[in-house]
Image (cartoon, rainbow, N blue to C red):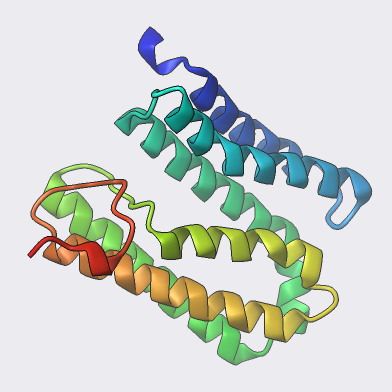
Amino acid sequence: MKKNITIPNCITFSRILGAFILIFTPSFSLSFYVVYTICGFSDAVDGLIARAMKKETEFGAKLDSVADLIFNAVLLIKIFPFLWKNLPKTIWIAVTMIILIRLSAYLVACKKYRKFASIHTYANKLTGLSLYLVPYLAKLWTVPVCSTVCVIAGFASLEELIIHSLSKEYNPSHKSILMLKK
Protein backbone atom coordinates (compact mmCIF):
# COMPACT_ATOMS: atom_id res chain seq x y z
CA MET A 1 0.00 0.00 0.00
CA LYS A 2 2.89 2.37 0.76
CA LYS A 3 4.09 2.12 -2.82
CA ASN A 4 0.84 3.80 -3.88
CA ILE A 5 1.56 6.89 -1.78
CA THR A 6 3.41 8.87 -4.41
CA ILE A 7 3.51 12.55 -5.30
CA PRO A 8 1.42 12.02 -8.47
CA ASN A 9 -1.20 10.00 -6.55
CA CYS A 10 -1.33 12.65 -3.81
CA ILE A 11 -1.92 15.30 -6.49
CA THR A 12 -4.70 13.14 -7.95
CA PHE A 13 -6.20 12.63 -4.49
CA SER A 14 -6.17 16.42 -3.97
CA ARG A 15 -8.67 16.62 -6.85
CA ILE A 16 -11.03 14.35 -4.90
CA LEU A 17 -10.64 16.58 -1.83
CA GLY A 18 -11.18 19.68 -3.97
CA ALA A 19 -14.34 18.16 -5.43
CA PHE A 20 -15.73 17.66 -1.92
CA ILE A 21 -14.84 21.26 -1.03
CA LEU A 22 -16.71 22.40 -4.15
CA ILE A 23 -19.88 20.78 -2.81
CA PHE A 24 -19.95 23.43 -0.06
CA THR A 25 -18.86 26.34 -2.26
CA PRO A 26 -21.42 28.59 -3.99
CA SER A 27 -21.54 27.88 -7.75
CA PHE A 28 -19.93 30.45 -10.06
CA SER A 29 -18.45 32.36 -7.09
CA LEU A 30 -14.82 33.45 -6.88
CA SER A 31 -14.07 30.73 -4.31
CA PHE A 32 -15.72 28.16 -6.62
CA TYR A 33 -13.47 29.21 -9.51
CA VAL A 34 -10.32 29.17 -7.33
CA VAL A 35 -10.94 25.61 -6.04
CA TYR A 36 -12.17 24.52 -9.46
CA THR A 37 -9.03 25.86 -11.17
CA ILE A 38 -6.78 24.10 -8.65
CA CYS A 39 -8.64 20.83 -9.28
CA GLY A 40 -8.22 21.29 -13.02
CA PHE A 41 -4.53 22.01 -12.60
CA SER A 42 -4.12 18.82 -10.55
CA ASP A 43 -5.76 16.85 -13.36
CA ALA A 44 -3.38 18.35 -15.90
CA VAL A 45 -0.18 17.72 -13.96
CA ASP A 46 -0.65 14.42 -12.10
CA GLY A 47 -0.02 12.28 -15.17
CA LEU A 48 2.85 14.47 -16.38
CA ILE A 49 4.57 14.20 -13.01
CA ALA A 50 3.93 10.44 -12.84
CA ARG A 51 5.61 9.96 -16.22
CA ALA A 52 8.49 12.30 -15.37
CA MET A 53 9.11 10.49 -12.06
CA LYS A 54 8.56 7.07 -13.66
CA LYS A 55 5.78 6.45 -11.12
CA GLU A 56 3.05 5.39 -13.57
CA THR A 57 0.99 2.58 -12.08
CA GLU A 58 -2.31 0.88 -12.73
CA PHE A 59 -3.42 2.11 -9.31
CA GLY A 60 -2.58 5.70 -10.33
CA ALA A 61 -4.51 5.34 -13.59
CA LYS A 62 -7.54 3.99 -11.69
CA LEU A 63 -7.27 6.70 -9.03
CA ASP A 64 -7.16 9.31 -11.82
CA SER A 65 -10.31 7.86 -13.40
CA VAL A 66 -12.11 7.77 -10.04
CA ALA A 67 -11.02 11.34 -9.29
CA ASP A 68 -12.31 12.42 -12.71
CA LEU A 69 -15.65 10.71 -12.10
CA ILE A 70 -16.07 12.30 -8.66
CA PHE A 71 -14.95 15.72 -9.89
CA ASN A 72 -17.32 15.58 -12.88
CA ALA A 73 -20.21 14.36 -10.72
CA VAL A 74 -19.71 17.25 -8.29
CA LEU A 75 -19.41 19.65 -11.22
CA LEU A 76 -22.70 18.38 -12.60
CA ILE A 77 -24.37 18.80 -9.20
CA LYS A 78 -23.02 22.33 -8.83
CA ILE A 79 -23.95 23.65 -12.26
CA PHE A 80 -26.90 21.36 -13.06
CA PRO A 81 -29.57 23.87 -11.91
CA PHE A 82 -28.14 26.51 -14.26
CA LEU A 83 -27.82 24.07 -17.14
CA TRP A 84 -31.31 22.60 -16.55
CA LYS A 85 -32.85 26.06 -16.95
CA ASN A 86 -30.79 27.02 -20.00
CA LEU A 87 -30.33 23.91 -22.15
CA PRO A 88 -32.85 22.52 -24.62
CA LYS A 89 -34.25 18.99 -24.28
CA THR A 90 -32.16 17.77 -27.25
CA ILE A 91 -28.94 18.32 -25.33
CA TRP A 92 -30.30 16.39 -22.34
CA ILE A 93 -31.20 13.53 -24.66
CA ALA A 94 -27.64 13.61 -26.04
CA VAL A 95 -26.20 13.60 -22.51
CA THR A 96 -28.34 10.58 -21.63
CA MET A 97 -27.15 8.72 -24.75
CA ILE A 98 -23.51 9.55 -23.94
CA ILE A 99 -23.92 8.27 -20.39
CA LEU A 100 -25.47 5.04 -21.66
CA ILE A 101 -22.62 4.53 -24.15
CA ARG A 102 -20.03 5.26 -21.45
CA LEU A 103 -21.71 2.83 -19.03
CA SER A 104 -21.79 0.22 -21.80
CA ALA A 105 -18.05 0.67 -22.29
CA TYR A 106 -17.46 0.18 -18.56
CA LEU A 107 -19.70 -2.90 -18.49
CA VAL A 108 -17.94 -4.46 -21.50
CA ALA A 109 -14.57 -3.76 -19.88
CA CYS A 110 -15.70 -5.11 -16.51
CA LYS A 111 -16.98 -8.32 -18.06
CA LYS A 112 -13.95 -8.75 -20.31
CA TYR A 113 -11.17 -7.80 -17.87
CA ARG A 114 -13.00 -8.60 -14.62
CA LYS A 115 -12.27 -5.13 -13.19
CA PHE A 116 -13.18 -1.49 -13.61
CA ALA A 117 -11.33 -0.27 -16.69
CA SER A 118 -11.13 3.18 -18.20
CA ILE A 119 -8.82 4.23 -21.03
CA HIS A 120 -6.89 7.49 -21.22
CA THR A 121 -7.43 8.13 -24.94
CA TYR A 122 -6.79 11.46 -26.61
CA ALA A 123 -10.55 11.83 -27.10
CA ASN A 124 -11.17 11.18 -23.39
CA LYS A 125 -8.56 13.80 -22.53
CA LEU A 126 -10.23 16.27 -24.92
CA THR A 127 -13.58 15.45 -23.30
CA GLY A 128 -12.10 16.19 -19.90
CA LEU A 129 -10.72 19.51 -21.11
CA SER A 130 -13.99 20.51 -22.76
CA LEU A 131 -15.99 19.55 -19.65
CA TYR A 132 -13.52 21.50 -17.55
CA LEU A 133 -14.13 24.64 -19.60
CA VAL A 134 -17.94 24.51 -19.21
CA PRO A 135 -18.17 26.53 -15.96
CA TYR A 136 -15.94 29.25 -17.42
CA LEU A 137 -17.90 29.52 -20.69
CA ALA A 138 -21.42 28.26 -19.99
CA LYS A 139 -22.83 31.57 -18.79
CA LEU A 140 -21.68 33.23 -22.02
CA TRP A 141 -22.53 30.62 -24.69
CA THR A 142 -24.50 27.90 -22.93
CA VAL A 143 -25.98 25.98 -25.88
CA PRO A 144 -22.97 26.12 -28.28
CA VAL A 145 -20.52 25.17 -25.53
CA CYS A 146 -22.62 22.26 -24.27
CA SER A 147 -23.39 21.06 -27.80
CA THR A 148 -19.67 20.96 -28.59
CA VAL A 149 -18.95 19.07 -25.37
CA CYS A 150 -21.64 16.52 -26.30
CA VAL A 151 -20.08 15.88 -29.71
CA ILE A 152 -16.62 15.39 -28.21
CA ALA A 153 -17.88 13.25 -25.30
CA GLY A 154 -20.06 11.17 -27.60
CA PHE A 155 -17.12 10.36 -29.86
CA ALA A 156 -14.86 9.59 -26.88
CA SER A 157 -17.45 7.30 -25.27
CA LEU A 158 -18.08 5.43 -28.50
CA GLU A 159 -14.34 5.12 -29.14
CA GLU A 160 -13.77 3.66 -25.67
CA LEU A 161 -16.63 1.17 -26.16
CA ILE A 162 -15.13 0.04 -29.49
CA ILE A 163 -11.61 -0.23 -28.04
CA HIS A 164 -12.82 -2.34 -25.11
CA SER A 165 -14.88 -4.49 -27.46
CA LEU A 166 -12.00 -5.16 -29.86
CA SER A 167 -8.98 -5.24 -27.55
CA LYS A 168 -7.61 -8.55 -26.34
CA GLU A 169 -6.16 -7.10 -23.15
CA TYR A 170 -6.64 -4.00 -21.01
CA ASN A 171 -4.30 -1.10 -21.70
CA PRO A 172 -5.23 2.07 -19.72
CA SER A 173 -2.73 4.09 -21.78
CA HIS A 174 -4.35 3.26 -25.13
CA LYS A 175 -4.38 6.60 -26.97
CA SER A 176 -6.73 6.10 -29.92
CA ILE A 177 -8.87 3.64 -31.82
CA LEU A 178 -6.43 4.19 -34.67
CA MET A 179 -3.74 2.48 -32.59
CA LEU A 180 -5.55 -0.84 -32.11
CA LYS A 181 -3.33 -3.84 -32.75
CA LYS A 182 -4.70 -6.08 -35.45
